[in-house]
Length: 173
Image (cartoon, rainbow, N blue to C red):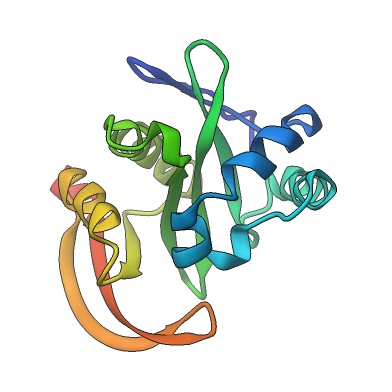
């Protein structure tokens, strides 16, 4: 795959580089990350650096997660957006650091990301899966045009939770 670069009105979505380790570490420490995606918390800058190094090796490999930093147009790293393989399908994921939430950045990032990544992957549908009690994530998915496909109880990061599974298809766009 060629290098990804998406510009929206306020954001830039591009590829990670190792210089982003400190921002990734800091952005991962907020309460929502600890609660909703504990496997994406990096206790040290070195842990974040190691994760970034791995993620960089995944670019171009459609069997691995494709994770991209979300930057403000000023260059400040405020989170990430990702496409993660689920057997023969894909799931979108995203996180915006706590000090930047409530500004519509997650929705803007997902809206900009979906058509580009889906075209690159050659797919026509993508899932958005979140805990039912993650109201902010549910709002992002609904705002971006995902449809609630099911609500079920299941494993989420090693714990049992009520889950919402949303679907977005190219035909909906």
